Amino acid sequence: MHRGHLPAEAAATSMSEGRHRLRTTSPSMHWDMAKDILGDANLHFDELNKLRILDPEVAQQTTELKEECKAFVDKIAEFQKIVGSLIELVDQLAKAAENEKMKAIGARNLLKSIAKQREAQQQQLQALITEKKMQLERYRVEYETLCKIEADQNEFIDQFIFQK
Image 1: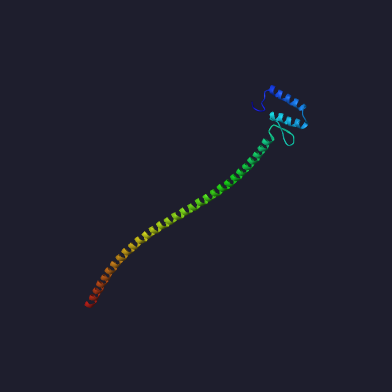
Image 2: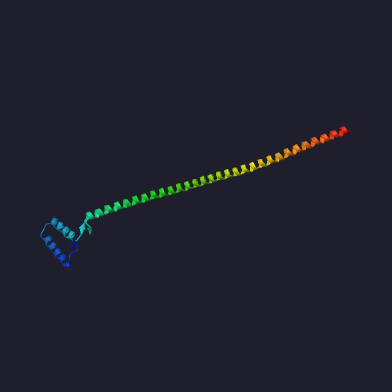
Protein backbone atom coordinates (compact mmCIF):
# COMPACT_ATOMS: atom_id res chain seq x y z
CA MET A 1 0.00 0.00 0.00
CA HIS A 2 1.28 3.49 -0.85
CA ARG A 3 2.70 5.45 2.07
CA GLY A 4 0.43 8.24 3.29
CA HIS A 5 -2.75 6.74 1.84
CA LEU A 6 -3.86 4.41 4.64
CA PRO A 7 -7.50 3.43 4.96
CA ALA A 8 -9.32 5.30 7.72
CA GLU A 9 -9.32 2.27 10.03
CA ALA A 10 -5.57 1.66 9.65
CA ALA A 11 -4.85 5.37 10.16
CA ALA A 12 -6.95 5.41 13.32
CA THR A 13 -5.12 2.32 14.63
CA SER A 14 -1.80 3.88 13.77
CA MET A 15 -2.76 7.11 15.57
CA SER A 16 -3.96 5.27 18.69
CA GLU A 17 -0.78 3.18 18.77
CA GLY A 18 1.18 6.39 18.47
CA ARG A 19 -0.69 7.96 21.40
CA HIS A 20 -0.09 4.85 23.48
CA ARG A 21 3.60 5.01 22.68
CA LEU A 22 3.67 8.71 23.57
CA ARG A 23 2.40 8.03 27.11
CA THR A 24 5.04 5.43 27.93
CA THR A 25 8.23 7.14 26.66
CA SER A 26 10.49 10.18 27.30
CA PRO A 27 9.90 13.67 25.69
CA SER A 28 12.71 13.30 23.09
CA MET A 29 11.34 9.91 22.17
CA HIS A 30 7.89 11.50 21.96
CA TRP A 31 9.27 14.01 19.48
CA ASP A 32 10.92 11.27 17.43
CA MET A 33 7.80 9.15 17.51
CA ALA A 34 5.65 12.12 16.53
CA LYS A 35 8.01 12.78 13.64
CA ASP A 36 7.77 9.11 12.61
CA ILE A 37 3.97 9.09 12.80
CA LEU A 38 3.76 12.36 10.85
CA GLY A 39 6.38 11.03 8.42
CA ASP A 40 4.20 7.97 7.82
CA ALA A 41 1.38 10.40 6.97
CA ASN A 42 3.78 12.34 4.67
CA LEU A 43 3.88 15.33 7.03
CA HIS A 44 7.22 16.82 8.13
CA PHE A 45 8.66 19.65 10.23
CA ASP A 46 11.02 22.17 8.60
CA GLU A 47 13.98 23.96 10.26
CA LEU A 48 11.55 26.48 11.80
CA ASN A 49 9.43 23.60 13.18
CA LYS A 50 6.60 24.43 10.80
CA LEU A 51 4.52 21.51 9.59
CA ARG A 52 5.12 20.80 5.90
CA ILE A 53 3.74 18.30 3.41
CA LEU A 54 7.09 17.85 1.66
CA ASP A 55 10.12 16.25 3.25
CA PRO A 56 12.63 19.06 4.02
CA GLU A 57 15.27 17.35 1.89
CA VAL A 58 12.85 17.15 -1.06
CA ALA A 59 11.84 20.77 -0.44
CA GLN A 60 15.52 21.79 -0.46
CA GLN A 61 16.13 19.86 -3.67
CA THR A 62 13.03 21.47 -5.18
CA THR A 63 14.29 24.92 -4.22
CA GLU A 64 17.73 24.17 -5.67
CA LEU A 65 16.14 22.85 -8.86
CA LYS A 66 13.96 25.98 -9.05
CA GLU A 67 17.06 28.19 -8.70
CA GLU A 68 18.94 26.15 -11.31
CA CYS A 69 15.95 26.42 -13.65
CA LYS A 70 15.82 30.19 -13.14
CA ALA A 71 19.55 30.45 -13.85
CA PHE A 72 19.07 28.27 -16.93
CA VAL A 73 16.15 30.40 -18.14
CA ASP A 74 18.25 33.54 -17.56
CA LYS A 75 21.12 32.03 -19.56
CA ILE A 76 18.72 31.04 -22.34
CA ALA A 77 17.31 34.58 -22.40
CA GLU A 78 20.84 36.01 -22.60
CA PHE A 79 21.67 33.50 -25.34
CA GLN A 80 18.53 34.50 -27.27
CA LYS A 81 19.51 38.15 -26.88
CA ILE A 82 23.00 37.43 -28.22
CA VAL A 83 21.61 35.35 -31.08
CA GLY A 84 19.10 38.11 -31.87
CA SER A 85 21.93 40.64 -32.03
CA LEU A 86 23.96 38.29 -34.20
CA ILE A 87 21.03 37.74 -36.57
CA GLU A 88 20.49 41.50 -36.77
CA LEU A 89 24.18 42.03 -37.55
CA VAL A 90 24.15 39.29 -40.20
CA ASP A 91 21.03 40.85 -41.75
CA GLN A 92 22.76 44.24 -41.89
CA LEU A 93 25.83 42.66 -43.48
CA ALA A 94 23.65 40.81 -45.98
CA LYS A 95 21.92 44.08 -46.93
CA ALA A 96 25.28 45.82 -47.29
CA ALA A 97 26.60 42.95 -49.42
CA GLU A 98 23.45 43.05 -51.56
CA ASN A 99 23.85 46.83 -52.03
CA GLU A 100 27.50 46.40 -53.04
CA LYS A 101 26.51 43.60 -55.40
CA MET A 102 23.91 45.86 -57.03
CA LYS A 103 26.47 48.65 -57.35
CA ALA A 104 28.93 46.25 -58.97
CA ILE A 105 26.28 44.97 -61.39
CA GLY A 106 25.32 48.57 -62.21
CA ALA A 107 28.98 49.51 -62.80
CA ARG A 108 29.50 46.43 -65.00
CA ASN A 109 26.38 47.23 -67.03
CA LEU A 110 27.52 50.85 -67.36
CA LEU A 111 30.92 49.70 -68.63
CA LYS A 112 29.24 47.37 -71.13
CA SER A 113 27.00 50.22 -72.24
CA ILE A 114 29.96 52.58 -72.62
CA ALA A 115 31.85 49.94 -74.60
CA LYS A 116 28.87 49.45 -76.92
CA GLN A 117 28.51 53.22 -77.33
CA ARG A 118 32.20 53.52 -78.20
CA GLU A 119 31.91 50.67 -80.68
CA ALA A 120 28.86 52.32 -82.29
CA GLN A 121 30.67 55.68 -82.33
CA GLN A 122 33.74 54.04 -83.86
CA GLN A 123 31.58 52.47 -86.58
CA GLN A 124 29.95 55.86 -87.26
CA LEU A 125 33.34 57.54 -87.48
CA GLN A 126 34.63 54.76 -89.75
CA ALA A 127 31.59 55.24 -92.03
CA LEU A 128 32.22 59.03 -92.00
CA ILE A 129 35.89 58.47 -92.90
CA THR A 130 34.88 56.19 -95.77
CA GLU A 131 32.34 58.78 -96.96
CA LYS A 132 34.92 61.58 -96.75
CA LYS A 133 37.47 59.47 -98.67
CA MET A 134 34.91 58.89 -101.40
CA GLN A 135 34.11 62.60 -101.44
CA LEU A 136 37.86 63.37 -101.60
CA GLU A 137 38.22 60.97 -104.52
CA ARG A 138 35.30 62.67 -106.33
CA TYR A 139 36.86 66.08 -105.65
CA ARG A 140 40.26 64.83 -106.88
CA VAL A 141 38.69 63.48 -110.07
CA GLU A 142 36.72 66.71 -110.50
CA TYR A 143 39.91 68.72 -109.86
CA GLU A 144 41.83 66.74 -112.46
CA THR A 145 38.96 67.20 -114.90
CA LEU A 146 38.83 70.91 -114.17
CA CYS A 147 42.63 71.15 -114.49
CA LYS A 148 42.39 69.45 -117.89
CA ILE A 149 39.55 71.76 -118.92
CA GLU A 150 41.60 74.76 -117.72
CA ALA A 151 44.59 73.57 -119.65
CA ASP A 152 42.44 73.06 -122.72
CA GLN A 153 40.89 76.49 -122.33
CA ASN A 154 44.32 78.09 -121.74
CA GLU A 155 45.56 76.41 -124.88
CA PHE A 156 42.48 77.58 -126.77
CA ILE A 157 43.01 81.13 -125.45
CA ASP A 158 46.67 81.00 -126.41
CA GLN A 159 45.80 79.79 -129.89
CA PHE A 160 43.14 82.42 -130.23
CA ILE A 161 45.54 85.19 -129.15
CA PHE A 162 48.28 83.99 -131.54
CA GLN A 163 45.86 83.86 -134.42
CA LYS A 164 45.02 87.45 -134.13
